[in-house]
Every structure is written in C-alpha cells, then in structure tokens.
Image 1 (tube, rainbow, N blue to C red):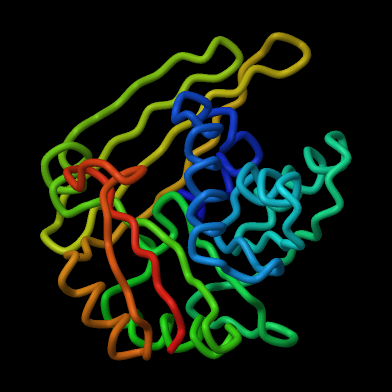
Image 2: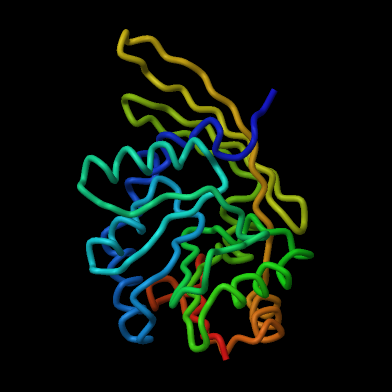
Length: 241
C-alpha cells in the first residue's frame, strides 16, 4: 500500500534532488528578494529538507521553514543544526496558512503550488496575502503544463544513487499527474529497505495562476526558470497591494 506524499522519501529528499543545482537556484531566490526589496523576515513554505531556508538564513534573512511532512521537517532540523543554522522549522499547510503575525516575504519553491488542487488556488493565495504585510513579496514556481504533460506524465524514471535507488512511475490524467514512487535505501548493515508512496501534482496554466493571484490582490509578473525559459518551469514574483 502506498503512503502519503513524502512519508517515504522525505528524509532523503534533498539528497535525491542533489542534481538540481540548489546553489544556483538559491542564489536566484536571494537576488530576487533583494531586487524586490522584500522584508528581512519571512517563511519558506514547502521547505522540504530546508536547503532554501538555510540559504536564506545564511544570507541574513530571519526565516522559518514550513512543510506539511513530518519526515522532511525532521531531516531539515537535523541538517540545520549540523550547519549551525538557527532557523525554526514548523508544520503547516499552505492551503490552510495561519501565521502568528504578518511577514515581509513568503517563498514556495520547487513545485509546492503544483500540489494544490485548482479549486483551492484562490483560497491558498488569499491566505498567503493575509500573512504578508502591505507591500510584502510572495515568490514561487510551478512545473509547467508542458513539463507535466509531455516530460513527466506517462513516463517512468529510474535512478541509482549508490546508497539509494528510486523508481518513479507517472500517469498523466488530464488535470494532474499521479506519481507512484518506490525507494530502496541502503542501511548501515548493507541491506536495502523498500519504501513506497504516492503523490499527485496538478496542472496549472500560467494564465490560471495569474488570474488567481490578481483576484487575491497581488500585483504579479512571471518569468522562466531562473529568469530564462518557461518551457519547464515558471516563476511568479508577487507583491501584496
């Protein structure tokens, strides 16, 4: 039986994504926040194992990491402690966002919004808006419709990391991609344990995202991956009006 999202791979999520150039991606995020003159305090939602949270903290921001998965938060806390990062990590769901006070910026990096069903976008963006101070900045990205339909959907990916191996089977269902993930993780005794989970990512068009953001009271612009092409990833830079 498959488990909930990130219950199986949450503890090694950052390790499994080590080829996505976290350093370049985090620098793009830091430069964008600086250019937008975002406040010095914020929340990194869907933080995973905390790479971007740690990068923001090291860049001088007062930032907290937030994620819905206890497994990823446990690892995020452990890595931050080892690196001397004092950021706090909290359990939370971006679709039901309630912060203790408003902040200057909110980030949701690496497909966080693709996990939000289309029917919940308006409420989600309204919750983010209400959690920001006036003029606050919201930065996030989505995997594009093209990526989910033509690259991820109806394809199988297998990768061997040495200490771990992942098999990722994806089925495109029109408005979403259903993902079945199997992880084999080598233990200290050299034996492998198997973990299984299911995930669903939803297709959001750029136009639908822009419409929902403007309806929630954001001024917004979009750009491609790290400021480049929109073929696979689209970034949204939003300001609370």
